[in-house]
Length: 358
Image 1 (cartoon, helix red, strand yellow):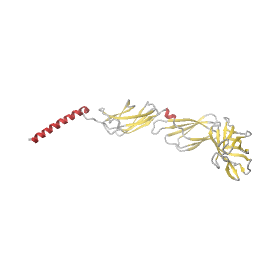
Image 2: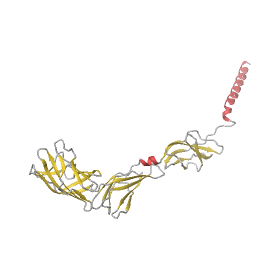
Image 3: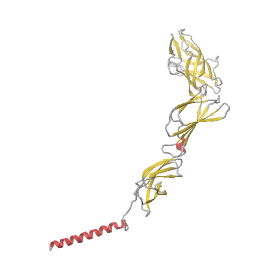
Image 4: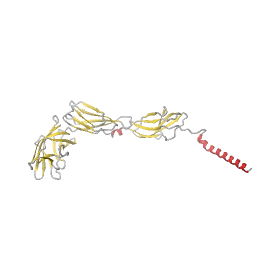
């Protein structure tokens, strides 16, 4: 009898407890269970100019009818209809200011049930003028030659779609050449204006996974005298009869800036030194390198020693005004006469040289 009473009491307690639990959760169930549609996945943001493209894979949940894309802390959103399950969905978001954004994609079913909050979030950028203004043009070098302006362009990655070089021909007409190759290459612009002092380089860039093209556009100064040359002439060292000139001598006039060039020895030292023949063997004057200063009319107005005026061993350079001291853009020939000076002998060595562009 006691056992029956205990069993009855236990059943009453369980029934009361279950009723209490149902009452506690009833407010959340609202008469039914909560349904969360499946969330989209594989989210990506593809940057564009004042816009982005949101890409995601649609959920396999067959009940999803709409996707809601929200940004700016959910203050802005658009809704797009669902397509086939597990298929890629792409949607443009336009009218965005340049900057960083976080996007949330929510799946909605017919009853308005939403996928789990913050289960599909992705960040990306909308690009604009600031991004474009910091883009570099394709790197390379422009040097003159008898055949024309030689372009030596460095290799680029796949974000570079093409580059265009604009220049003036001998008639003053602006011409352009477009290059699409990604690997390093060399080309020659022929029929250029003889007094050409600049070229324009425009590079088209699509950022990684981007949907729009941006442009780096620069005008690059061109020094017509910057080129490879064969140097001929005479050289007299008044302190030593065993030192002679190295002619013919292969050199480069390298532009320091539009009105200043340094003389590079391509045969022996491979640096900014003046090669000589001393006792029958190749050598060079230590701490002596020729830097040529020009005016706007291609006249040589001075020469100085790269290593100091004077250098630590007392050597300096000085222009001899009796020389031609001018670059001729028609023949692409530079004629210059100058001295190497040093203590004890003042004018130690006289150079009277002609540089013929290759």
